[in-house]
Amino acid sequence: MFIYNVTTKVDAAIHEVWLSWMQQEHIPDVIATGCFAKAQLLRLLEVDESDGPTYAIQYFAESKALYNRYMEKHAATLRQKVSDKWGSSVIAFRSLMQVVN
Image (cartoon, rainbow, N blue to C red):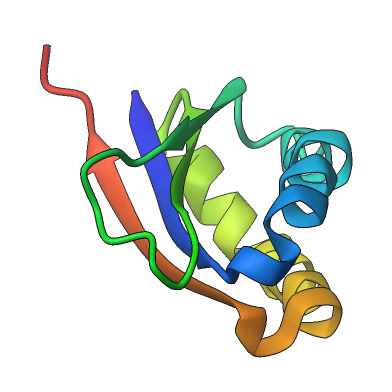
């Protein structure tokens, strides 16, 4: 199992609208690519929230090939949608992890 993790710092001014958009539109769009079996949305605790909250969105892929397919065929388009909608109000850091046990 592979986890594609997107850690996102969200400007406080858009937080509630962004959260709703993520749950209702963006995460379902990513799952609809067929590359991930499920997603999990988490809020980071014990971090500086003076500029806004930080979230981690984890997408679970059954294989590295499925993750690679997402990156090759879907990632650029979906990232562009985020950029077009939120601009610099959202900053994301992405990583790939493999489940060991």
